[in-house]
Image (cartoon, rainbow, N blue to C red; front, side):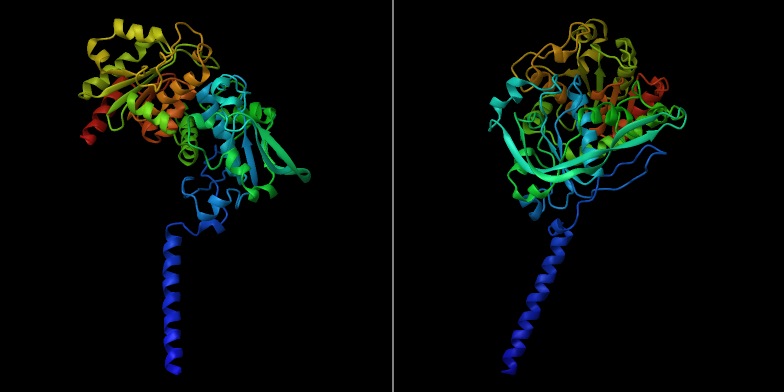
Length: 452
């Protein structure tokens, strides 16, 4: 009898040892993490303003067992991201307005759900994103109502002016069950894989019903978040930006560098091109090639920005060609006249190196839409097509090791996808202190010699 008990005890100890080993292995690979509260995103704020730094160590695609069943687990609520500004185009909506709302969600431990409506009308395409294209005529989610963003205040020390921006969500009323309904496809999934969650997934989960749903009203998005918020990512020093956020004592490149670093952190966590767009980018500019990206915007351009004359790009292109053999120059432009002038006036050695988006690489049989004048491209064709084209250009340019550009949400999105390489190896021709042609040539030679 004692021998039997001894054998049973030994077997029990062996099983316990195996379970401990299995648990340790699972913890190492992050399989038992659903019982920990999600950490927040790494955001490095503008100096002097709320220097909160935190980091999420796992990409959003690594779902734990509990998160697959309960996407709301560990979050204080859900942030429904449903619009940008009224007149923003694709790069501005996706890589500034959506991106900054994703930061807001992370700062306040909210699960972000992206389902864009038709408010940002230059991005929304009723023929593709409308209700008739959705699997359901309208999706409804039952959650708690009564939580709204508070009004945080930024006081500019130089002028004494106060600027409102969205602060921590607070309970305004008693939390009550409420049904939210959205229509259409939500736009996002036409170009990206779903972020942490999407509306359809959350709507199906009973676990989320005891969580509050938060939205940012239009005034809290523009100007509050886009212009006034101290931690928001920006593509240049906008008009109306509070003086304390302009930081004119900091070089333009250093100022942009901090915004690019923060933007890159958000893109790494939440953004994944979908299969169709990846296929188009692969056809336009295959992975693994040495290339210089040119972004030449010559249609509409305003808000303290200027069109860069085409001849300003050529010396840098020639310097690049001198230091590389067989390397590609990927050109992204919204202007048909830019292509014509390059073919007519640039040296043949430069023209032969240029690759650009065409109908065979755009994932569409439609001709590429480019403006013959100063009219914005998104006003000339179907919005889904112009969205797809510019996002394909962003994906294609981000594969290059060097970048020439001006001030644009498109160019900054490219930086977010390939930071810090392009921040260190790019020339912003609208920066008065930009790198000289000789320094650019030396940099290309140095980088290219290391790659060889």
